[in-house]
Image (cartoon, rainbow, N blue to C red; front, side, top):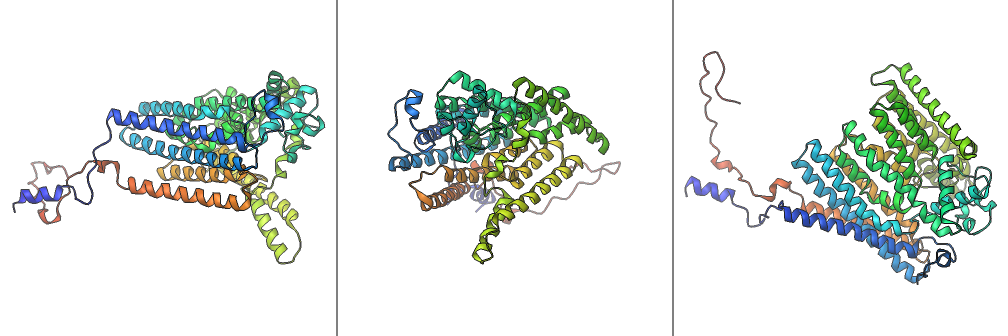
Length: 544
């Protein structure tokens, strides 16, 4: 056998692994993109259809909205079937998201210039609009907060202060749709949000269903602000526009909670990101104004006020200059809030109701979860019921810890402003008195704009899918019971593991291995050729 034939035998593809043709042609890429568009949109359609049978709807909602009644009653057997349809839609949406990330990552490895990254971000934004469009027709998903928003807007319309009374103070169809947990609690939301809710209820009239669904306009407004300013923020902070868009706008957690659940956190984050992005480009007063508007929606955005103050102080500034910048940004925020309180006539009453969300005992809140766990152990040990005391003590410790984390990250400048703000928001959510899946999006949205390694992007994606599975437990019909919910969680985890294993077997080799490359045979490797003699002047003519 000659040396040439030996090389050909070594470089030939192994019969155990047939070489696949390179799937990089324009037709193949266009077909794959259309398949992903259809898969994500189909998942959203299934979620929308299932939500109409499983989400909360007030009594007589069909007559109230002027629509035909659906043959599904929450808690009945058809509702369980519809819930399975919803699960299928969410799994399909998550799968399409992961597949879109794989497609985008391969494309990003081949082209890394900024202009291509911007074009990819716009393509992903268009895909997210296609995926999210069916959810515009869905009822409030995975939460009854939108019904509370409509009731609060109705209270402002009737001249009843939401800062002094709960929705139950104004009996009627709006108050009946509110979760009983919040029926007698005062509103912790800022005057801007309540005024916007009031104007929406004025437009929709006495229909509580139309009023609740129309609250989605505020969430859409927040997402539009994010679509404009988040890619800019990512580019200014050294991140990737396409990474930020994929992690936020195609994320099923964002689509389900911000768009489907209509939470005012979407509007808050849209204003906060817009303010931070504008401030980083030099418009400090406008940035402070936008962040103040975010605080007037929900007080959680106050952390971003500190970030704007740090931008105001400038990079590499002294500690006292940073404190001065924070004070100036805070003064601007207070001035805007005072003017809004006077303009809307609502004043500062929302400050006294900021502890309202703490009435929820969420296992996502670390202090609450620890208190509930230790309280259960003490009860089992016969030491009595000390859960309430543990919750109060551990929540105080959690609040102090979150404040310490924020001080170290922001004031001491141990991290860049964007990353420090994102991590502080995450600490406030996890260590706060109450936590919900969409609370984790406060810091997650900002973190998506920061420079991220591939491993951290995968971690954020895995956390998002896990929170989607957690969300399903709050949407299960009563007919399923705890056993059904447990089976559901196991099924979701098994599906996720199966998808991950399938992806690993399908893409275990790098993209460059789609086309076989010659493999050098160790037996034919010859000794290295001797280096040529140094040229005059002492330099070698070869390049090592």
